[in-house]
Amino acid sequence: MTRLETVQSATEVEAIRVEALGKAGWISALMKTLGGMSPDERQVQAPRIQALRARVADAIEAKKAALEAAELEARLASETLDLTLPAPTTPKGSVHPVSQVMDELAEIFADLGFAVATGPEIEDDWYNFTALNMPESHPARAMHDTFYFPDTAPKGGRMLLRTHTSPVQIRSMVEQGAPIRIIAPGRVYRSDSDATHTPMFHQIEGLVIDRDIHLGHLKWTLETFLKAFFETDDIVLRLRPSYFPFTEPSVEVDVGFRWDNGKRVLGGSGDAEGHGWMELLGSGMVNRRVIEYAGLDPDEWQGFAFGVGVDRLAMLKYGMDDLRAFFDGDGRWLAHYGFSG
Ligand code: PHE
Image 1 (cartoon, rainbow, N blue to C red):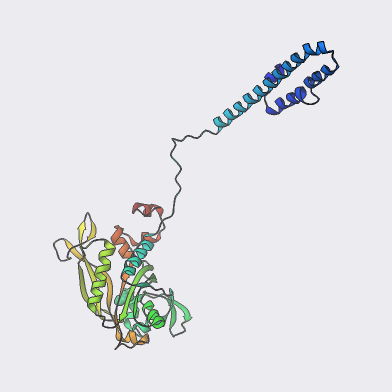
Image 2 (image 1 turned 60 degrees about the horizontal axis):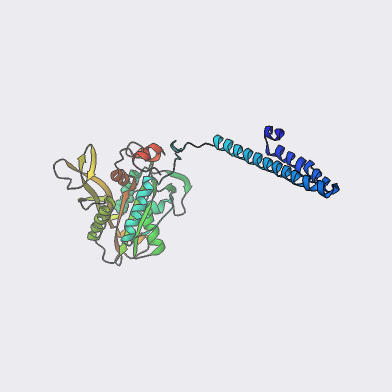
């Protein structure tokens, strides 16, 4: 018994059990001696040996239980968790404001029956310029700060990074014919860089081609989408005559804003005291020459088109003030504007 008190492990206890109670153990040997005894002697010895065996078995069980309890105790002590500690934070990704705005716009325009169309960012000169009524020598080309590739384009000129999403107008008309109701969101490129210009930025093009489409449809569509996007009915637009080679007439659209704590907030007429107009997008009725270039009959089909800067829409909606921060990939900047996961 004293040996049992000092052992530390379950394997040692098991060894003691085998030595005592196993087939060749000493208690088993004692039991066997009963067979050689006289009945009287056996009557005296049998209960004593059985009592001894029971005591030894009990002691062994008790020791085993005690060792197991101690082991559990030790494990619990070493594996302690402090549930009051703050959980470690795992940084999560989030949707970029530009993607968010493109998704919002796709949803708004889907409600108006517009499908989403796409085109390549590495574009053929013909789709980016010529078919948009900007032939080789057209001065409007110079305003586009184009990144050219050395390769010759299949339709003449050189391959380039598209300078606007307008080539998707041509691709849609060529590929699907009329009628058309699409928006085309995507990246565009111009060799220009400062606080309000980045060499890559985002536009959404809109194009409607149908019979009897007029400027009123354009104005209603723009008003409806801007009210939905900015979640307010207080949107006042100003349409100014402008010039784009691919629209006639061309209309530049401004939106009225007021100053609030140094920030522009949309709403009200830009002519009111303390208000102003902000240029928002270019648009117009699709030039009949463009419709012709795309292989449709301009006497049968008319339409309107518009192009709007997505980054600018995002800045306006979410109150961001430096365009370049959009492309720095700084999680703290995203989090500041409520964009972290
Ligand atoms: N593509 C023009 C731009 O990038 C915008 C525009 C699109 C104007 C469609 C009229 C019609 O400035």
